[in-house]
Length: 536
Ligand SMILES: [Cu+2]
Image 1 (cartoon, rainbow, N blue to C red):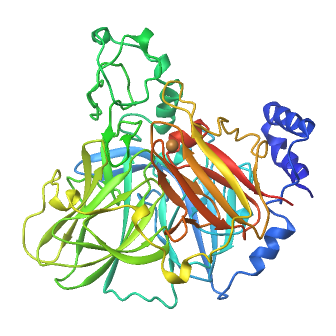
Image 2: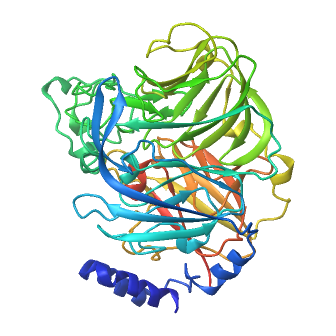
Image 3: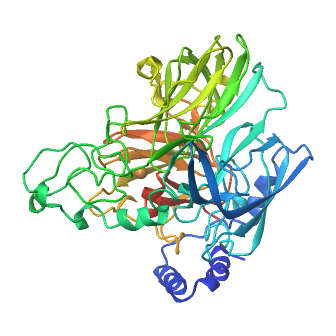
């Protein structure tokens, strides 16, 4: 079955809108024949994966739940098996995961599971309608794939803005020949939280999608004032606006009447505007900082921390009071070890670090970059009182390591080779009309193959992320782990600062149709997505 025929089957349930889009696409004649997600090229590439023969079976039930965030804070949300974060999945590289998703979500919501960072077979990537039909309410879908690259990954739905609910959990792929030695291993999941507290992610997107241009201006905004916040465009007819950040959930914020939109969040590290959304809480492993998770160990023990940013709109600066971090991996892949006091981790990024524990009680603090708020976990190896929820260890302002300063470990660096294909990926749009896009085109999820970025199997591909906007974007490619520059780290999600260009390289060795998108959940949903598709 060719790509278009298969798509027409998938679209059969989508009704008139989907069918109309299909006709428009077919008659344009501009779409080349693409490798089908369930086609022979996908099966052939999958056969080459190293398999151990072991299978790990599990069921994940997506359901409405009342989450206990600690300190008396509860929130009605959607979560896997009612847990926040969801139960960690742990495999050894080469094993096959057989995970049945049971959709018990309310409101007839459809959903899916995307295995973030895993180079898996395309038809298990969980992106409706590109790689499968959405899993309807009350239905099940079994994801079955082999994970052959060890590392720190996670999973979440790839439908709407469900990522900003509680639907996320770690996926750890262990190395059967683990080269690092450590005594303990702790998984640390960071998240920006509002669901069930100030509204829902759907409420947030409903407000944001109108952009700043459609916002009601309050009376005190009549006097002009400068602002270095969001891209103002031509605001001359709008009477200017204040520039003070409005991070508090209870505040109406700045001088504009917004319920969810955050104005004036500034971060030099992120090159300006830090985020779009006000969050009342920043969680570490599902807990607020006033009632944190406490990790217990002994002085002198060596610990591997696996840090995962599952947030939707927040980059975190992470530091452990009284300790240096040794960075060993990013996005699952090893780097040349690098010492740092602090890390910057964008949405969708992961970092593994080693620490040798001192004697006492230490805050592991996640500073919401540019948003003047923190999350926290605590490491306890001796006596002492628990740090206060607002503590900011000096390491946060110490030597900070960003991905651009890291180098790939020798065994995962791509062999040098001239790029066979180069694509310019312009990041476009802004806050005025919330028209985030790629190459000026807002992605249409109902017609994902309309304007593919094509590659051919076997090619070395270079993507130039050219950020023309005034905001940073964490750019995530499915199914591949690209390399930053000629010897930078292997990653699947990378921060692209405003007005900067980042070039990444990958070998086209995993045929299918893969999303390339901003991992800001709201930017992605607004249209900052594209399809990287292998030609048939
Ligand atoms: Cu973005």
